[in-house]
Image (cartoon, rainbow, N blue to C red; front, side):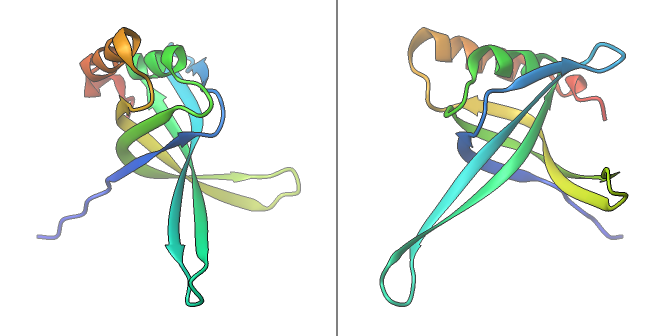
Amino acid sequence: MSTSFNKIAIIGYLGRDPELRYTPDGTPVCNFSVATTEKRKDKSGELQENTTWFQVALFGRRAEVAKEYLSKGSHVWLEGSLALSQWTDNEGATRASLEVRATDIRFLSSSGEKASAATAAATSATDEDVPF
């Protein structure tokens, strides 16, 4: 029996404000980008930074909470799976991108009562909110 596993965890900063939309059946979907930066010294001792951008989608109640409490620059922890999206661009070329379908989110940059409420609201959402 073979097993496969698709899981990713990211800690990073939002690159833009979250955008909330609804599917035709009314499911909330929130999209935003998250950047992670790795810092290390190269062979000559110079500090190098490598930033990786991730496109993120949240669904259901988590999507609504993200739209309400997050903004560009927010520090978040995400966990979910990677999904491949393919489409044809305006010139007829096939394009593809990976998207993080987040199933869990934690708010790291806020403080006080608002952050507690946001984290409680996000964690109270169930996996039933994810439409796949």
